[in-house]
Image 1 (tube, rainbow, N blue to C red):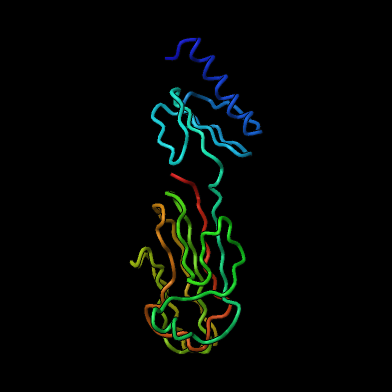
Image 2 (image 1 turned 45 degrees about the vertical axis):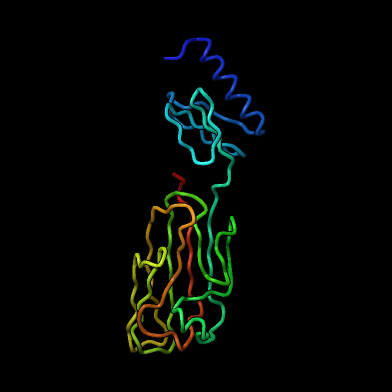
Length: 201
């Protein structure tokens, strides 16, 4: 239990930090509940703080700058057939970015790199056009397949291989799509690849 003087000092320190960030705050229900701010800072009261990249006081208050917003969505806007680079690496490339908050999706390489440790959500939708071959699309995590999706109907002009997943990623982990089976010789226009940070750890 904190003595009265320590509790008073804790309140002053928290208020100073918050006012310095120019944000409003509300108190939690207990001593360990995080205070989530809508502005530029996040203050967490924890007896064992371990915030990555945070500044921690002796009172167990950890302050992190708000940079946790991470999201991307890429689309294939043209129906060109795979390039020589695609045929060699079997990477599925995209040519337009609809959203790239944080700029962690490299459009040229069509690779997402996690900026921090956390839980991330990913989804993909790869369309094959006028192609009777079955395709298998893998979501690759640091060169290893995590999930797959298939499309193999021979009687339709367009069909999509789709899937989604939640992943626990470490900082600098890389995610991309790879064509494991079949080909995309008819193009893959309207295909999408999206992801976002659900919450940091």
